[in-house]
Structure formats: structure tokens, C-alpha cells
Length: 129
Image 1 (cartoon, rainbow, N blue to C red):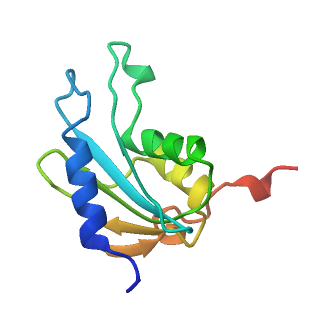
Image 2 (image 1 turned 90 degrees about the horizontal axis):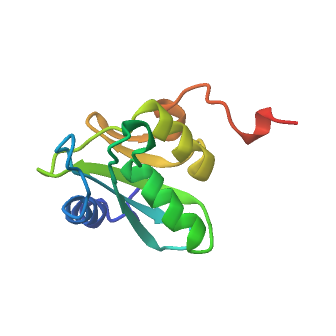
């Protein structure tokens, strides 16, 4: 954990939250993560009038991971537009599990926790034939 610049990741999440498109909820969300090869990726929420097709900040971040060549997430944080630390929803926890696995470190209100604690007994690629 000491090699992760949590302060820098939190700052990146707060900064990208300001670019969120949130005309309906008003809740701007930014996410930042470090990859296993040292890249820092960010994402923000992009709302839509058809609420069900809104993209969460985590979705935006994972899209940046995949379009940027892939890799694995090793550290993740999420912040609201006022700078508050936010927890990923269940859907986004599943998305993070897919691209970071059990060892992904997640910045939570109760401290830094591995994904295995954030989403215990997770369903993943190993469960598929």
C-alpha cells in the first residue's frame, strides 16, 4: 500500500468529477485508479435522460483501461463533486472485480480494503466454463 499515491489518486478523482455530465441527479462522480504498469486512469459519470443507460464513473474508467490497451487495476478511489469519498455501487463493484480481482485495493470510508472484502464471494471469470 505504501507504493500507492492515495493522495494523488483522490485528487485526480475529485478533479475529473468536475467534468461529469450530471444534469439530472446533480451528483458529479469521479473515479481514479492505478494500473499494474503504473498508469493512472480516470473516469466520470455521464448521465442520460433515459436513466438506465447512464454511465457510472467506474464504467468510464474501465472503458479508458480497455481502450488504452488493457491491464489490471491495482488501486481505486471514487469521489463526489464536493470531494467526498464514495463507495462503488454493486454493479460497479462487479465491474472492478473483473478488471482488478480480489487484490484490487479500494479506498473506502472505513479505510483501504482489498476487493475481496468489498465484494466477498464474488462471481467472476473463474466461474464460467
